[in-house]
Image 1 (cartoon, rainbow, N blue to C red):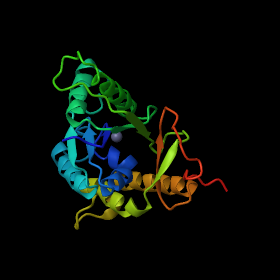
Image 2: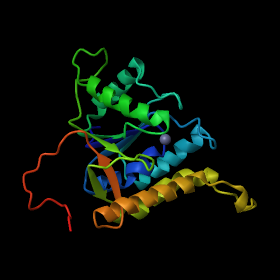
Image 3: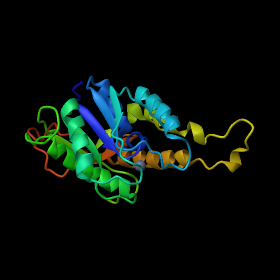
Image 4: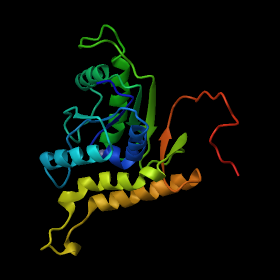
Length: 239
Ligand SMILES: [Zn+2]
């Protein structure tokens, strides 16, 4: 399957938290979208990889994602090693995404910034004809970086996800089922990590949404300058 848009991130739920609304919006536009989780999230404090896989499948459906896979990198040990880069390059050749979304290259969690480097270098290597892997050489033309709440960086642009916001919320919370207290448990005893994360990412969506004059938005960064043809139709609100 060839994709229009592929989001790559370290752990299952990273994509939902940072660019799930954008993935859904692009799927609603008719683009084929995909998610590649580098790890299965096996170092998460709660829940097994099997539970997270089930949750990921649910979130995938909610975001109308056509393809989702796991690269099989050990959780908490994401590195841009030759071995991982070659495996990633093989997937890039198979899916041939036009645009790739990676995590921003600075982060608190080492897996996140290593995922950024591994993603970039894997995409680059995929275009080298003589690389010792299968598939026809291919390189995505565009790489965008999604920004998490902790990154103090000014985004290059913001995607309006107001219409996708509720569905994005459901997709994020799909990962929280094992954190939810059972009916017999006292709610106060359970620390709802995913809820805290979700609240923070919703604040971020609100914050960046307001900056472009809508309710909710997802921020992105690009390293390159954007070519513009029509400055009259540019969707920028100055005053
Ligand atoms: Zn993560």
